[in-house]
Amino acid sequence: AQRVTQPEKLLSVFKGAPVELKCNYSYSGSPELFWYVQYSRQRLQLLLRHISRESIKGFTADLNKGETSFHLKKPFAQEEDSAMYYCALSGNQGGKLIFGQGTELSVKP
Amino acid sequence: DGGITQSPKYLFRKEGQNVTLSCEQNLNHDAMYWYRQDPGQGLRLIYYSQIVNDFQKGDIAEGYSVSREKKESFPLTVTSAQKNPTAFYLCASSITGGDYGYTFGSGTRLTVV
Picture 1 (tube, rainbow over the protein chains, first blue to last red):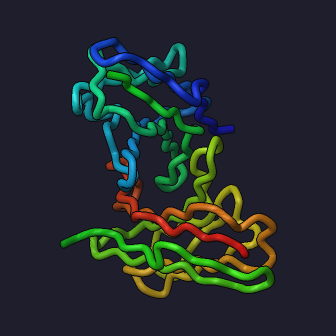
Picture 2: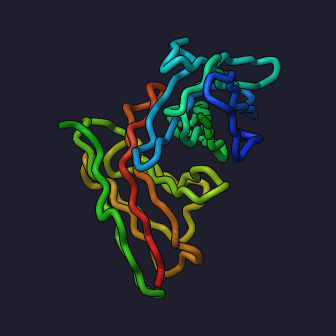
Picture 3: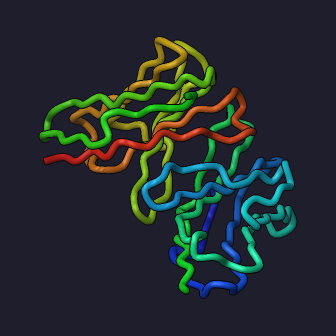
C-alpha cells in the first residue's frame, strides 16, 4: 500500500539552526515526491519536487530510494520558515497525491 | 488572474442537511481533487476527477458526492450520511498526471451546528 509517514508532529528549532523534516514513504514503483508548505493564513503551496532537484527558499530534499526517504533540509532556519509542511507522493494512479500527516515547524528567535 | 477559487470560506450546516461546496478553476487544468484536512491526519483524498464527466472515489468518499460537468468546476456535496463532516475542505487542480504538483484553493471550513 502507498503511504507517506512524517514522524514528527512538531519540530521546534532556534533561528540559524539546521532543520530536517523527516519523510518516509512506502511505494513499490518509482514515486514522484513533493514537499508542500502552508504558511499561516495562506494556501497550501508547492515547495519543491524531487524530480526538479531544485532548492527553494534554501530548502533541499534528496530522494533516498534505499531508505525510502525524502527528508527536507535547510542549513540555517529563519523565523519566516515557521509553517506546516507536508510530504506527498504520487504514484502511477493518475496523478493523485498521497499526503503525510504534516509537521509543524516552529523557528524561535 | 489565474487560479482556483473555493466558496464559501465558512459554511455552517444543521445536522441532516446536505451542503455543496464550490470549486472553480481557470487554469485549464484537466484534473481536480477534493481533500479533507483534519489536525494530525494530514490531507485525505475524498474524490478526484481527471476529465470532464468522470470521477473516482478517494480514500474517504463515504458520505460525499461530486460532479464534473464542466472542466472548470468540481463541486463537492457533503450529505447527511457523512458522520463527521466538520472539517476544512481543500480543492486542488493539476495538469493531467499531477507530476508538476497541485494548485490549491484557499479552502472551506464546514461546521455542523
